[in-house]
Image (cartoon, rainbow, N blue to C red; front, side):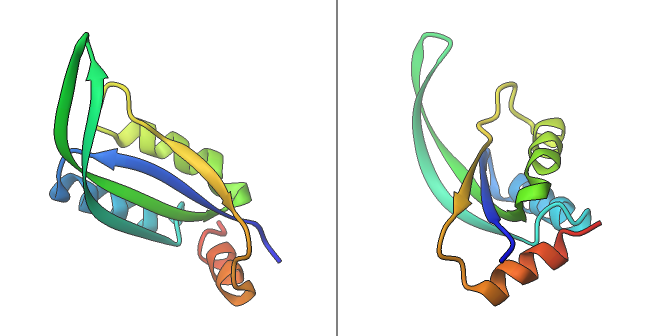
Length: 105
């Protein structure tokens, strides 16, 4: 069964999140991107910030993680975007194969 990964990032608003999600799927870097509205508290430039954000969860193959992360960083509006990947365990085999097929060059 092909390994499936989830790559996470956050964006400032829904239009930016939708645009990035569409681009990543169109480029076959992600098979699927899910968007969720969240609130984030973080320290930035010495002050605690509280902002609404949109979390993206991008599903890709093990072979596609690096290219997906590079594209997110290149297209991201933040100076320091959070971009991280997790290998997913126990993925339904037909779904894992679909992810692999949809992210193949």
